[in-house]
Amino acid sequence: MLTYFSFALFSSWKFMFTPLAGPAAGLSFWETFISCCVGGYFSASIFYFGSSYFMQLSVQRRAKKPKRQ
Image (tube, rainbow, N blue to C red):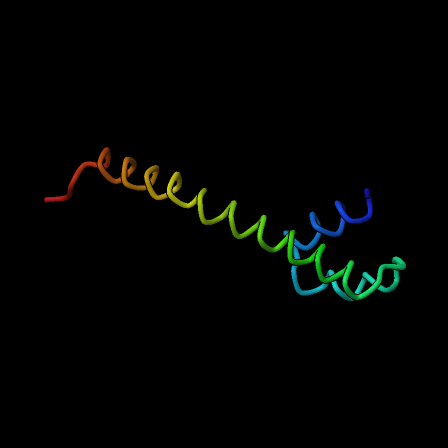
């Protein structure tokens, strides 16, 4: 279980290189595939739902900035 979690965590960071390490860790194709998909979906969800916070922070920062004349 720890192996699957670590692969999901690693694929949320570097989605492209994680499948290469799957067979080296002794995982089958489907175990690697599912772990990578879970990590990719987790990362996409974090960035998608977290982006509204950073956009709101940017709007607030621009509102505080004095306008040039």
